[in-house]
Length: 260
Image (cartoon, rainbow, N blue to C red):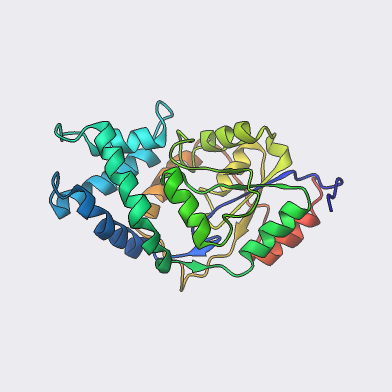
């Protein structure tokens, strides 16, 4: 049933440590171990790991001049003339097609995530998986399968190929809203990060901070870098948290929301 009285028309929701819990550093190490065999003829293992980390950070600091996917690849192949752009992308694509799925065992699905999204969609509200876009589309859709939400009628999932910014840059949210053709006042952003996710409020979006289970979801080196970026970005704008709680609390907030 569509509830036409609702003022929120789109729910933007974070993915990592919001819909799934995982230990970030352990995930990164496992990722590198699975991906490295696809590029052993270009790098030793230590160099590969450093390239992987540096190129991911390049996406986090992307300035909009190229897609995040382009930022990653251009940085990854720098100083390696024998590895060109197309070959690099092909190697990683094979990894995502053949091995990436094995990392699904490293995440814990947050209870009630699928149920929440189904209720939101049944109410006629758009759903955007507003995950920080550091994975390519192929990997991002695999991750949705891990969370058991890939079959839902999701309007948009942000990924490295359709984004040129990362959180907490307000431009990330501007791009996302442009793709779904919604105004900030029509949208609610929910996620576990008090700056990266709540920075959506700088555009006028309503925000909801999702409680994080600290024992199961642990942040790591990438989140520390994102956090440093977030602190710098926070100086550019005022951000706020409108409400907080569990995913069940988020549902109650959304369906009982009245714009002040």
